[in-house]
Length: 428
Image (cartoon, rainbow, N blue to C red; front, side, top):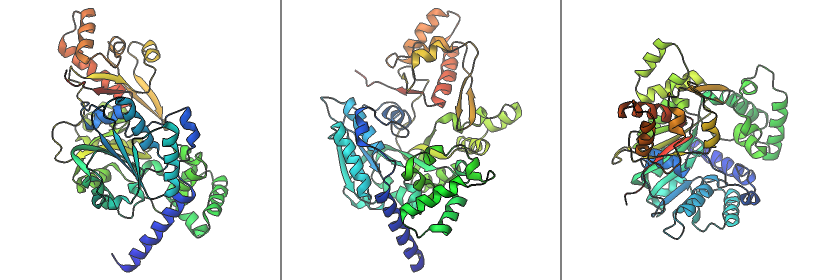
């Protein structure tokens, strides 16, 4: 690296630190912990277990997680609370939180105190320094919305891989290029107009510009960025005034992972990365179906055009055994995730597909004829084999192969929207 480039990186590093000391992100009030637990992807235990540990992880056993670039604490608090709930009276999982921002760390620590969580250790540390920190190895690493702000994201991911256990996994989020259409021209303009102003003046300038954008401006026409624009000063700064960020396409995510000795197990939610959910022409569908999985994901990204972030799971390239839970495993227990199962089953109609609006796009997935009978028996305790036995008792003409096809179709639909996962209970 040339001296000029190094000086530029150092200035950007200082600007990034100033941003998060001035505007800890996302904005959080520790008093809110009394009424809610913020949950999401990646790193919810049910979702993580499905995509990293083939559904077989017992979280009441020793478990150590790293939240790298923990910000104001969403992932660290969620993981620590869920691990505490999973192992009361037994071995409690531990979370190590790492971040350079003292202001963000203070918010995260206050949230942990508000919940009475004692299983989080807080560290002020750069991600790049993790391999020499003495921390780890970790069963799981969360790094959400951080690598794309580093001077060298590839080096950051290699540092995370260095502290990951061989049979562990990661949950990451990186910005998606297509869904952030309009962001970077406005970022560039704001740098030219007031890049050297104090942070508060830059926020005021950005708000004036947003209020005066022409109707043809791509940022104004992008419907998927409201959570940042409505997220207070911290959200606005993170979207339009950040001193350093980049966005990725699917193939670039895959290349970044491979360069760090890692492999993708899933993008979530899976249906957003399934091109057959986006087109109806049978000839197009056949050609898309013939593509390798990662190329199918890239095709869906290009078709939809609205993926503003990529949430995905990784394991080491040499990871032993399967990482993703198998819907053909009769011992697996299907579990609903953040859905009113009773209302959902009651509203299911014969022959109607599952559909939802996602960032302005309607996604649909077909459901099998016996969807209501199968879904009505999913309770988070009953394994697939038991569900099969009950459904086949009521439908004597249904053989094992036909049930497997129908369950797979139902699972693809609900898992595709992030509403159904599998866990495999430990053997007695």
